[in-house]
Length: 427
Ligand SMILES: [Zn+2]
Ligand SMILES: [Zn+2]
Ligand SMILES: [Zn+2]
Image (tube, rainbow, N blue to C red; front, side, top):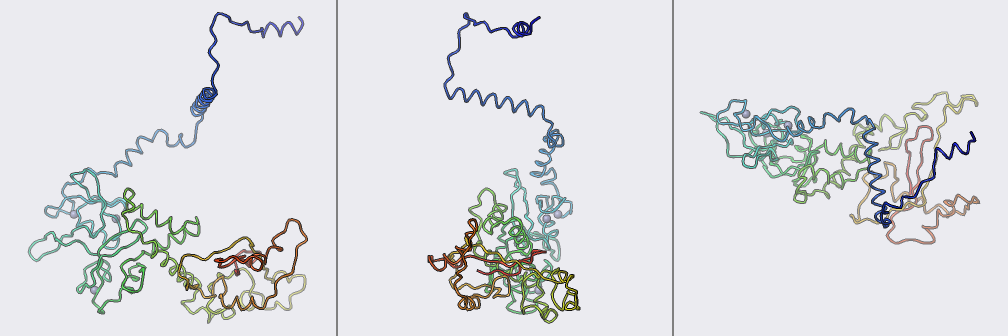
């Protein structure tokens, strides 16, 4: 049988159906809707056929996990007598910052949080039927009276200098703003008057791991934990101070965030001081490390590359006698790089501001650098390479088109080649 005839019998020519009325031609938007519909169907089918790992794992647990999440929004033991057995005390207060905290009375919450005063107290509201978040200073403890325990009218006060316990001579009780990594607390704080009057507030705050926003009559402080976390968020995920503090404010109240105090200006100031002090601590400057590492610049805050050979410190003492073929083992390599597009403009900050590092860190002292620049002639070097325009542009911004308001331009850096720690920046 000829192939052509076989092919014809399998695929007969379509016979036009003249009896069935044809649907009207689709308009443009109808065609798009129809295409989308097909696309959704396709995705639906694909999802049904796909066996996603996440659904394999969690799919059948969504309902259970959801109800377990909801369990934390209420508690069956709420409003029942507290397990402490104190007369009339009901279990009303919960802590979500603790792991496995048993809902208890306000007094038990205070006792359990003398050294964790910035955990939020979730107090059950009978009328509304949910927990309401309070600072610990809104709770009332039981005072131990001479005859019987009684509920004090006075709210709890965070006492410094006595590990949270009562001070025989408290003083300077004040309303304080404490910024912790779980939110911003308006809390009541008392200083210890046992040793000196008036109390040294900065000293007492720092000993309680609270960094004051100012050294003059502080009323705001940031917990060390919060500052340490921001340092890592900032360095690791490049999170700005504004965004980090925004998240902290939302942790305080995610519904009425605008009503939460905004200590942004104080935070910027404190972060700067905290980072400077941390770098001094890490560089060993608080322990007079210059006496031991006398070959380094005095007051050094740079992270010195530990692998690069430094004469008389970690290099071969017989270095000058090293055979020529092995000299590469003792050499230190540096590379210089510049960015001729990068500028920093004047900012809306203190015009008299100065660097806290004062030339001991990665940037040199401004006055010394300007003095050095004054003796450096304008470069006449021109690049012949079509693709390398940086060399030709390097002095253009400074000399030909000075822009008012530009504070610095064209930063350059020196990097240790094999190990990569930065050695110095210049601009
Ligand atoms: Zn807690
Ligand atoms: Zn209790
Ligand atoms: Zn005291």
